[in-house]
Length: 176
Image 1 (cartoon, helix red, strand yellow):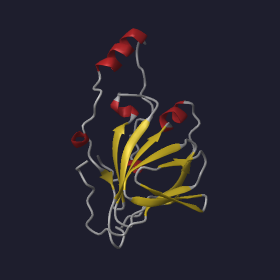
Image 2 (tube, one colour; image 1 turned 90 degrees about the vertical axis):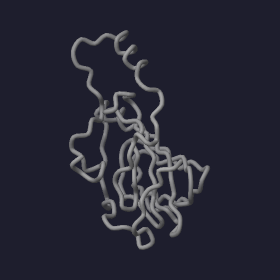
Image 3 (tube, one colour; image 1 turned 30 degrees about the vertical axis):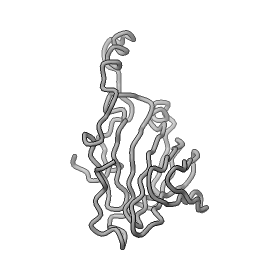
Image 4 (cartoon, one colour; image 1 turned 135 degrees about the horizontal axis):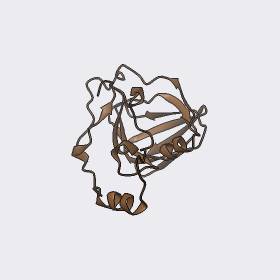
């Protein structure tokens, strides 16, 4: 991959095309023959140095076409870019404690919580611990919005290019 960050890639496949003669029976046969389990070790973490992503389901994988599901891990004291998009997103908090900033309002979360990012919300994801990482499972319908030609998104503050003061040398955990 030529780019370090997922959002910088210009060769991403947002909606997998169906080329040639379309046959529903053949497409269903193809989908049913695809792997039903993606092993964590088969999907690398990318991005960083404060927010790392592991993309489990994305249209370019040909496993599905309407969902984008990934795990994010935030380094100690780490944060994501501040951005907004048309599609909503659901964050299931797997580990750690952090907070969202949605349209200037802080919403704290911890392991076991669900954080919901409504449509058109300027938001940023943050790890409030300066000692431990935080991990979340992100589920969104972004590919469907792109398919319907309804996607609009913008970065308000770019993803940090330097580690957080307490996250220097942090590498996302490969264990579960």
